[in-house]
Image 1 (tube, rainbow, N blue to C red):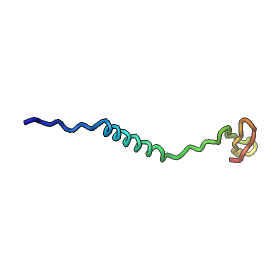
Image 2 (cartoon, rainbow, N blue to C red):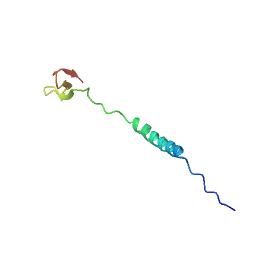
Image 3 (spheres, rainbow, N blue to C red):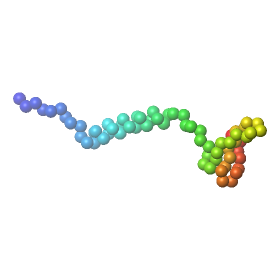
Image 4 (tube, rainbow, N blue to C red):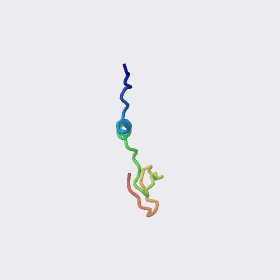
Length: 66
């Protein structure tokens, strides 16, 4: 009696399994709260007089209330 080895997954099946694992990881990462980052070119500054926080553009010097 010849013993047949268990069926080996094909390369494609192995690949799909890996993709599934990765995509589930990505999904769990994507649900985290997005860190609020000021728009490009803007820095957060705190006004000394009253402690209000503003965004100031480093190039044009434009300020926006936070």
